[in-house]
View 1 (tube, rainbow, N blue to C red):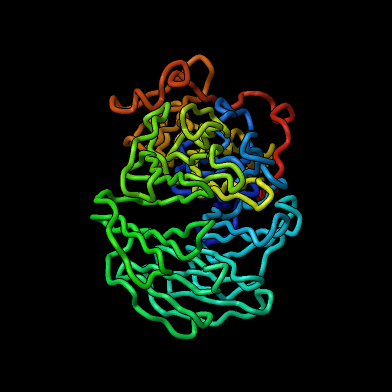
View 2: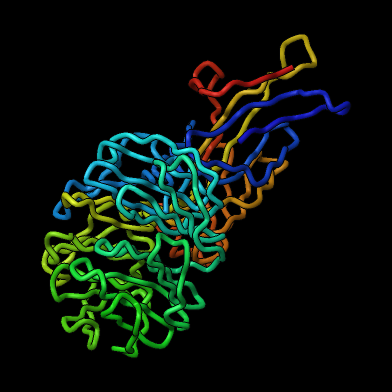
Length: 454
């Protein structure tokens, strides 16, 4: 982001960049009678701070975390990867080669088990919802249909037009493609050139058995359907609705329904709840292909959890202040998890000093701080106090609106929130205060972005 001041004749008076390597955005700016500039906005992390009262609000973790196996904790991959986009889709071609796609249509490839990444130029429409391999060839489900690449992702051919894709699978034995749309289930036996509508059921998700690729599961709003012949015929096996179905290499079958985890041992005919230690709803679940006892689970707001005993016990496997999107396993048992980039509210202030014997001013960075909590916070508006050079910020967090005041001197610092937000900004964090530096300019410390003053 940047901030600039233009004079009465539109001449540039002051301008500077502000931000880090991730997604940053300024939402409002105000200037008080002293000429101090107050800017409020949001950052997804790694924001350069100065005289910060709240330096631990670091936004999202790395957009991609990796675990060497399902027994271990998830830690960031190569530094900086994915810092400019949320990665929602992951697909392993082998234990070393993995692809990642984003909602913005970006595609990345790693040849060394996610240690390093390179962007893959593509003309695919955004967003990319699904990735699946058919041998060396890659299928991509997008907002405008299903695309297929047979030349190492150099070019793409549209294989099925239309939005509302909810599931994609490939039969490793017959090379058949299975496609679930909100309007039905389609099957292709010729690499997507022609398609047959095999079910007109309203689909929510599609899953394929890793041992028997002709066994498919199709979840609808009112039932779970199963096919034992590659989608030619379907039968309802349960009246329960699921947002995700996870078959395993054993008789165990997992399903996510209304944010809760369930398990079945009879191919989906009956289900038992799997107890989870917290109330945070589940988003995705994965199963180690070599050991169905090991499963990580992605939650809405408390990161990744893992179980080593089919869900009997759970332990946290990543930082709590994170929002996972997907978890996948490589053939060798290593795992990757993609995360949504969530924002934290930020406040930046610039002061100005009059040059001796001149009418010109020199601007300096006075302060940059996070505010809010570890949820997704956004600073929406800012106003300046004409008497105290204080900053008043209005913003939004997942549980409602908040109002904060940052005063100009340590003795007068206060932090205020709306009543409904007292659980979002709890003590002692709720008592945070921020003060613009009153130190001489030389003692304020360097700031890594250029400034321009006239």
